[in-house]
Length: 308
Image (cartoon, rainbow, N blue to C red; front, side):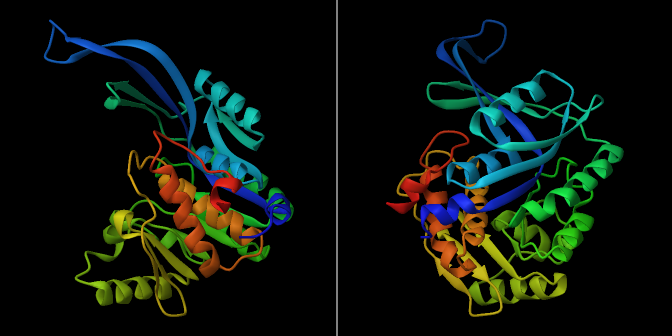
């Protein structure tokens, strides 16, 4: 584990789709007379950073300096996101589009379980994103590592160009991918798909040898330095120029997997920026992911927790 000063000196630029996670908690005492659904009497509301904003928060909680670049709407949810980010000390480069609805995920919780999730969203327009490419280029010299958090919401339309710019500036690039087209991540140093995301691109694998062959073929095709596969209860696997490296799962009890991938890639990025190699950082990132799945909703891990 790098010392706290090295982590505090590391500078991350996080780019991607952000969202506001809303939680409404309440008691379930009866079934509605209107339809066979529970009636939830809301007693408490909570708001948390979601998507790339949660990635930025995770990196900040570990002690790094973090800037978040994204696009939001000109609405109430955007204002709430700005306030939460400011409170956590995350610097922001926020593009604004009045035609865009800031993504909100509303979860209704009763009897300690999620009863319903309602999503509010619309896709950003290309003009706003093109304007953010200039902000991205200007921000590069002041950061050590660039992290793209792709949630497939349209915020990373120009990611291929952004990866080119980051590589030209000599900055390591990490990507948490989404969708079936990984070609747009070509040239990245590290991508961190989960099992479902990777199988969507390379197909289902028969065994570990077949997985290794498919992962390496994809890595070579796209010119990617390393593929870090998160595998839930099977831990994590790293495919790079060396022999495959596997670390077992750390979670003793899985309560909620929401945001675990955010924590893993944020930890990897911070540790790389602080001077560790990817192979050294991987077990610590795996531990960080194991800690957050034992907590409810989007969560984060501190430097001290990771050190223990």
